[in-house]
Image 1 (cartoon, rainbow, N blue to C red):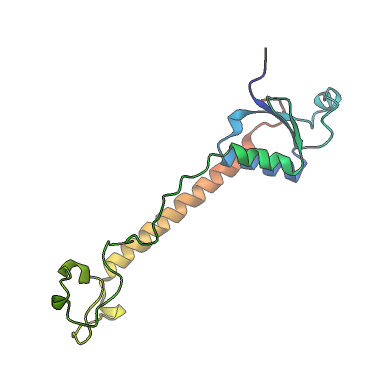
Image 2: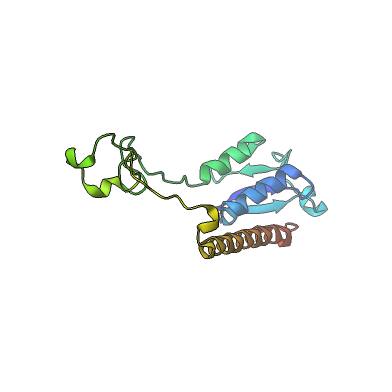
Length: 172
């Protein structure tokens, strides 16, 4: 029966191996590999002669990868994030001009909604001090940020527990 997964030989006593395992879990690629821990004496006695260092990956195409090639191979398996094309002349944010006119805008045939990001020179505008701003919005934002940070920390702990709870003593 042919193996349709890459083989990863590793040791729990090797920091580099554990880093590779962590990368696999974070990238959601763990299921693409058959993990073989070499720490058990029975496994170590039956290792193929091409496994001389850990971590070692044997690909489905029978390539043997060690050292920096291991992480390079894993990085090649991670799907790249698609970035949007951003035109250097596109309007970002609210879609209005990000500059002001020195002349009166009514003489320039400029739509009035394009003036919403600034005021004209000479207009009396009032800037509120921090004490005058409604603090309820600030408190809501602080609460939302605290909730987000708590959620992120809980996710980090779940990943750590997942890695630690995996039984890497057996062939998976």
